Image 1 (cartoon, rainbow, N blue to C red):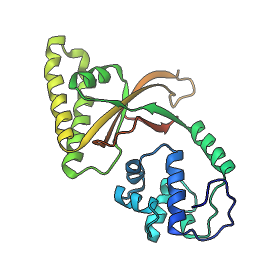
Image 2 (image 1 turned 135 degrees about the horizontal axis):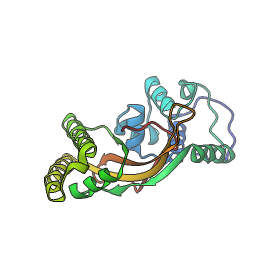
Image 3 (image 1 turned 30 degrees about the horizontal axis):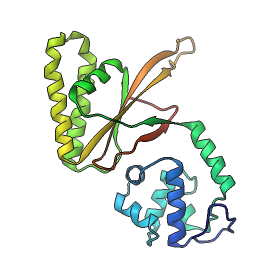
Length: 230
């Protein structure tokens, strides 16, 4: 296997070299194999096979190019030059300029989630791997439930919140039984209004991310500027 510092002339990559390039780009973005699978629409097993140097088809290589936001979706199907160390460094600097890395903290109790929801103005909640239909529905129910609670949290007396904690806990436990582990992060942002005279609004964003149980990362990257749900 060649190193990232070697200069190569453009040519068709061998399956082993493609796996090397895909892993480089994935790690540059601090994505897990599960996250790359979710973004590309490929299964985690397919990502593993590609990175292990096994043969892949045209559609798989196109999906990977799209995931890495390569302008030419057939870049991996044409003669390609493996990036040098300097090119990788420049790409890393661009990525860090456009993205922020947040800690992925364990989310295990309904009471903790309720408290986070009360402090947040909006959220970005998404799975980081392919969920089963049952897990996908349960995750959607959890998100819908805590968003509804956020809209009326001020109306609850403290003693009445225990029913909310229990309901959220039931969803969290059900997801864990289905092999889903929840991680969260919070982030302060400024939302700019559509009108020039509108004042920027400081908000707290809650991220709730579903990872495969036992494969949770310690951090994840997200764009510095991006749309989030109220």
